[in-house]
Amino acid sequence: MTADELGEFERIRRFFAPLAGPGGLGLRDDAALVDCGTGQRLVVTVDAIVAGVHYLPEDPPETVARKLLRVNLSDLAAMGARPMHYVLTTALPPELGAEWLAQFAQGLHEDQELFGVELLGGDSVSTMGPTVLSLTAIGAVATGREIRRSGATPGDLVWVSGTIGDAFLGLRLLRGDIPDPEPDHREYLVRRFRIPDPRTELGPLLGGIAHALIDVSDGLVADLDHICESSDVAARIELDSLPLSAAARAIVDLDSAIRPRLATGGDDYELMFAAPAEYASEVTALSSRLGLPITMIGKIEPGKGVHLVDAAGETIPLDITGYRHF
Image (cartoon, rainbow, N blue to C red; front, side):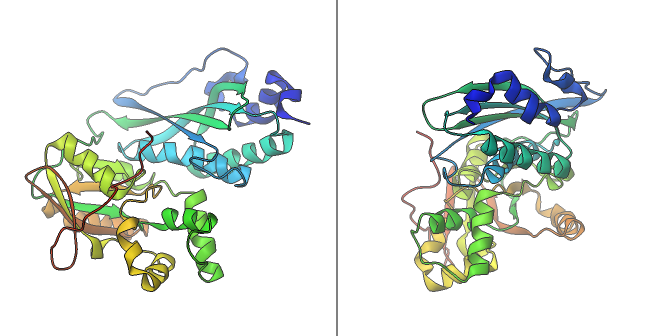
């Protein structure tokens, strides 16, 4: 049975109503109701993913759902907000049947439980083009504790969570662009592409520490440049300081020329932030508390742009700095 044969309201009733929280009103009304506590600000973000662009059409439906939700939760974390709710829009081609939808909904269910979020509603339409999935995430942050891109100042240290370049390598493995590593490494890198890890615990804890914060989605260099442009500063990043997983390092050891591409590949969904040097001990304590590597990779300077440098301090030329939608 195709999704179209189910009908819009049967599709909503069967697959998405079970995901709705109390504010979603069982998905039976035209809008949702959300309480906003005193001293809190709502943080709202929206992101879309397209088959063949942001994920591969053959990717398992549950991983597609989890990536869709997680990339939006990452945006909330990048403003220091805790996630609460989301709204979902699906534009599905007729050939995607009920089983695809069931697996997609199961992926959402698993991550709802993991991240403590609830569906409020959305829309469901048919398309003759590729699958398009859009999700709006809603979070909350204490008034005055939100972290923007525009606060970096010269002298700040630049930090990044987790590891960089895994998703880029995972996609290249799926496309057959690079030789397969050992099975455990391949599995790890592919998972990092398909199911990113939004740092929802770290983001809210950076209030009062980070001057500027962003998630690494388009590529570390490109996203740091967003901070630099918004803050009217420059940044110097040391290529050798970028944190790599064991799987990524094994590939770099075989082909060192690929290393600069890890700084521009995107889809990492790690948090990158600028913080005063005197807060280094607080950042280290957060890393220990969360069991999450947080690595100092460079420094904010006067000027413009991002300079990726080698061990000798020489600027590394880059053909591209990150993913561009257009």
